[in-house]
Length: 228
Image (tube, rainbow, N blue to C red; front, side, top):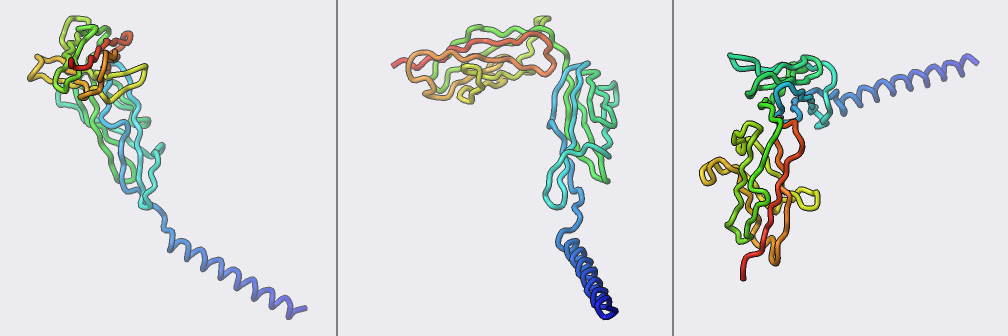
């Protein structure tokens, strides 16, 4: 009986040693991952005075894994020397717009930091876009210039983004952009060459502005095929 117990003790000892060796080996092959970098989302957000903008911090570790950092993150903002552009909750990372301007947002964790810029814009309660409808010939060079004004009649064309849509879906076949040199501060929309080969297609141009609080604003852009 004692011989059997001795054998069992020896087997148990070898099993314990094997388990310990395996644990050490696994740690050697799979070292504990450490945080390598922090990125902020959304990147370069824009929002209105008095509005809130939640921020997220995403980390990448030494094994290449990417995950959201939800604890142990400290948030801060750098503001201009005069006035406060935005405040931030140091725990949650939620920004609140105070005055128009641009700031740097920083999230720190484990001796690392990630930054991005954020822009606070004036609140606009109403917008108009003209002409409506607009008309352009799809000849590869003709464009329609749109003028966007706020409730006070101010030209805010350079501050907005125009998004072409067809049947409710955004399209990339029409490019809209701000061209101050050629159109006196208005937004140009230029269709791709030969987008419309026959007849006329009506596109919707949606007006987007980060500080807008009113009803949606759109215009119709009629794109016609070039004359034969």
